[in-house]
Image (cartoon, rainbow, N blue to C red; front, top):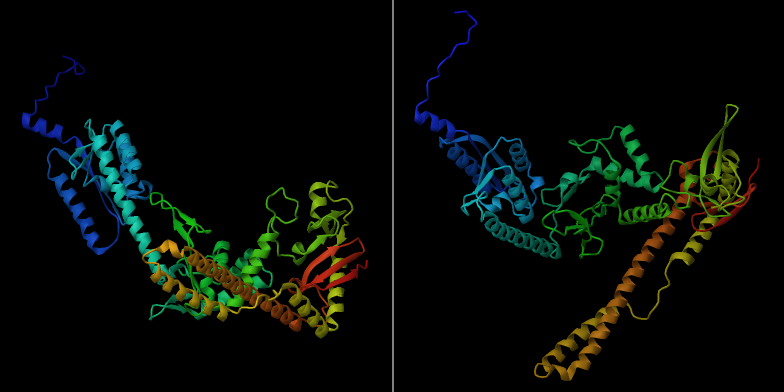
Amino acid sequence: MKDDAPRVIKIPAKPEATRQAEARRQLRVAAYCRVSTKEEDQANSYEVQKEYYTDKIMSNTAWTMAGIFADKGITGTSAKKREDFMRMIRHCRQKKIDVILTKSVSRFSRNTVDCLYYIRALKQLGIAVIFEKENINSLEEDSELRITLSGAFAQSESESISANVTWGKRRAMEAGKVSIQYKKLYGYRKGEDGQPEIIPEQAEIVRWIYERYLTGASLRMIKDELEQQGVKCFEDSPEWSISRIRSILQNEKYCGDVLMQKTFRQDFINRKAIKNTGQLPMYLIENHHEGIVSREKYDAVQAEMARRNAAKSPSKNAVTGMSSYASKYALSERLVCGECGTLYRRCIWTRNGEKRVVWRCVSRLDYGKKYCHNSPTLDEAPLQQAILAALNTAMADKNSLIRQITDAMETEIIPFPGGTMSLGDIDRRLRELEQQFQILLEKATDDPTAYGGQFKEILDEQTFLKEKRSGILADNKEQAKANQRIMDAARTLENASPHITEWDESAVRQLVETVKVLSKDEIAVTLKGGIEIPQKIMY
């Protein structure tokens, strides 16, 4: 017989017990367990679940371990937020799991839609989910109805829990109880008394950010300057971002107040935070803690931020000349075309290798003569000298100028107090009306309808007085802001140099409101406060 001739090799049959055990071992079983909070009592439950399923799978000779998947401290209303759950689903799609064990439908998912979606997807793959508490196997015919009912009960329970938690939080807000996230609050830490405590070195940075913004710096400029100075934000997150700087400028906590319920969750399923723009009440606690900046400075920043936002174009196609706040050059937001009212833009023209810096009407640049027909092109150097000349003319008699500006601003922006009732008068009358209401209420016990007209008169007067009171408070607040603006303008003029020799972007921002281009040879410089100075451009 040749060496390469076919040979038959007999493989002995396995014993029946061995063969059946190996067949049973092919069933790959995984377990999923979850606890929804990180509280210590549930942490024990979490570990117990893992230990229970590990022992159950490993001690069954018919099963082989396909993994224990567990999410700790994660909500059951959203599957996508549960990393281990999604990892288990990927293993199922990769044919690595035959059966999933879980304690109950509520452990698997509290969202009925999610629960049914994944049950059906696994069923198509031939994978069973065993719910031990409800004794349901998802591959059985009537399983989907039973799972739907159990899932609906689980979701209803979550809705009830969510509503109770929300109710509790809102009652706490009404009572003035504050919860502050110090991890993201630059400049403060939690003090020994539980109140916000200022971190001195970080507070200096916060004050510097407020000052730079009020002198005209953009958020991008502030970010770049902080990075150039090597200033770090938080130890675990040292990088500054524009959104972080904006948050510091907008956060009322830096002036000592706390505003609660700025956001809310409309749907407990997706748990997306929605900005509260009036859908729900907010709760403001004034003077809650020591502020890093004064309330006046905080209000000034909010006003400046509103002014910059108002100057932006509503869309890319809007003909306003400003698509974003451009503060690198003071004139980018102040130089206005006298013909069409659009802002001017700084341009660099190059001819024969020579560069020429000019300012052009944005409407003429973007649309030709469609909207603006005769706006002139202005060379930067003569334009700047004309503006400086106007400022120096005004600053020659600084005291007189300050008086003019404060007088003009007082006439223009301070509200004229009206009415004959003071806040004290209104409060006293409201107390009287409340007493009358209570007396009338006692009389009307037997026959309320007989006193309907009197009730209406009291309620109407109370409503009128409360509205009047709110109006007076609003006027007082506006007057305080107006006074602060006058004081700031006067202080800026007092500190300004009586004769400016070189172009200073910061000084122009603080002193000049607008510069209107009247012609190629003439401009009108309007100072903060409304004083207008015509000025010739000398070439």
